[in-house]
Length: 178
Image 1 (cartoon, helix red, strand yellow):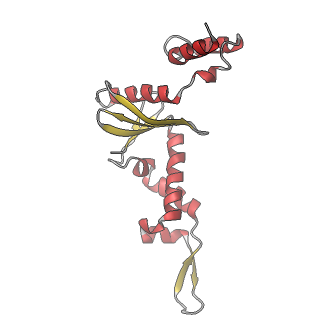
Image 2 (cartoon, one colour):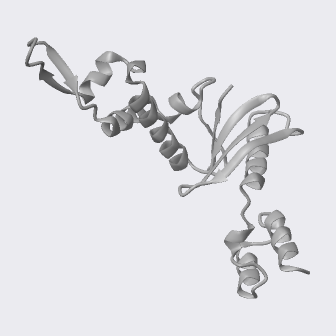
Image 3 (spheres, one colour):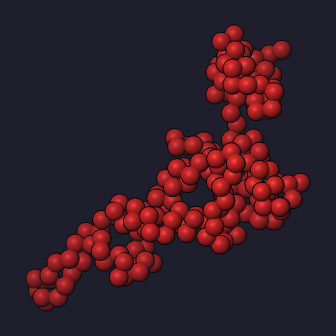
């Protein structure tokens, strides 16, 4: 059996037949580079989609993976299941990190989308030397983004459909996006 065939078999069987120890044994024998080589983000998206479908009473007959990727923080995938679009994260921390980046981008590009009373707290307030009127400068984007997530929650920004977060038994979280 070739190294690629062993790696492919281990990838699909990792959570069903092989324990973590068995994968480490394959790595120790040189048959796979490491047990981490068995991870495939698209396979993860399908398995997590099935988990989501079962928890939400959705048909899991036709799961389409729109994209999936492994990031420094964890795994992120966009899927369609039973006609609904979902974004999946391998953990809440990964979702929170993505939400923080999303809100940061929104604040940098379109701060006017946020409530003027709320966002004002994150500007330096000074006086215009020519008109004597109050002037807002230097938006603290990082502090504003963190406060937005702490105040409204990750789901408010990541679940465009209903603002709900679905926690799955595996530790993954899902947000409906349509």
